[in-house]
Amino acid sequence: MLVNDILDSRYQLLNDASTRSNEISGCYAGDLLSVVMKSAKTHNVLATVIANINTIAVAVLIDLPGIIFCEGNLPTAQMIRKADEEKIALISTKLNSVEVILDLSRRGIV
Amino acid sequence: MITTDRHYVIVPNDYNEAGKASSDIKRFLKRLKLSWDLIKRVSVASYEAEINIVIHSIGGYADFKIDGDVIYLQFIDCGPGIPDIELAMQEGYSTATEENRINGFGAGMGLSNIKKAVDEMTLVSDINGTVLKMKFFIREEDKNVG
Image 1 (cartoon, each protein chain N blue to C red):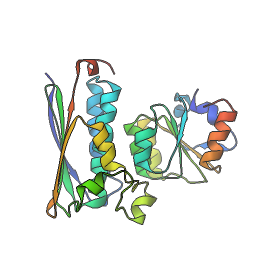
Image 2: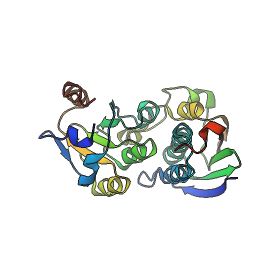
Image 3: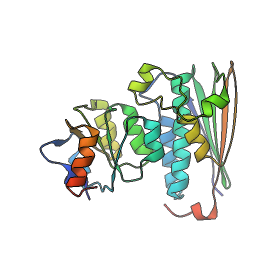
Image 4: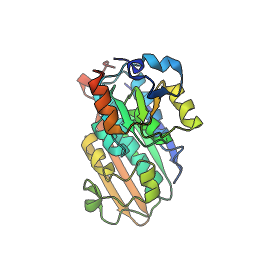
C-alpha cells in the first residue's frame, strides 16, 4: 500500500507530493512518543494528535513513512520542511485515531 | 575496522533541537549498512537518553564512539540527578511536567526502553549530574545487511 491510498476528501496531504508514493504497511496509533518508539513497526503509518517537531524526529528514527495528525491538529512550517527533507508524508484529518484505524481497516489499507 | 568518535552538546528545554544527536548517529549507522535491528536499538536508546537530558536536566553532552565491533554511547548531564534510579527504571513512572506531556513525552518509558535496547549499560547519578553509558555489540549477522 502507498500513502496515496489513504488520501481522500477526509485526509489531506500537507507536504511534498512525492511522499504520496511512500510505501506503508500497517498503522500504529499513539500519543506518547516513547510508547510509539517501543511499539510501532517500520513502515507503519502513525496516527497521533502530537503535532510537534519531536513527532517527526521519532518517525525519522524508526523509519515511519507517514504521520496522520488526527482531530484537526496541524504541523508547523518548520515540521513540514523537516518532513520534506526526510521524505515523510504529513497528513491531516478531522477524524480521531480510533476512527482513522477503523476507516483504514474498512478500506483494506491496513 | 570501523572507528568513529563524535561529540554533541544537548541544550535543556530546547524541543526544536531535541533528537539532533540521535538523528546524526542513526544516519552514520545507516551508512555502515548495519542491521535494522541494531540501528533501531541504538537510535531508540540514544533518542530516549537525549530527550531525558532535554526534559529533566540543566544541559549535557553525548558521545558516540565505534571501536571495532562495539558501539559506545555516553550521555552526561550536569544535574540535578535522578533521586531514585530504581523507581525511575520502572515503566510508567515519570516526573515529566504538563508541558513535556503536550510535547508527547512523559510516558515513563524512557529508561526502560533504553534498558531493553542496550547490550550493556551503567547509570550513575547524584545531585551533580547523571552519567549513562551504553554498549551495543556489532555481531556478524548485523554486518552488511542494510
